[in-house]
Length: 65
Image (cartoon, rainbow, N blue to C red; front, side, top):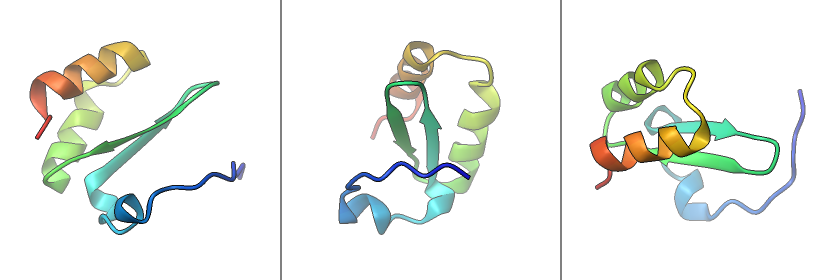
């Protein structure tokens, strides 16, 4: 396991883990938030293989709330 120490806002930590998808690249960590576990799982399935920019665009088009 590799841990990178950072300060995550309490508001994000309080959100149920089943409503978050966490991705990382060599220079960033992204936490995507969803209204339901079903939405999170669908997002994960439909964005397999996408790069960060593509995944971000997909999220904004389909899940932004």
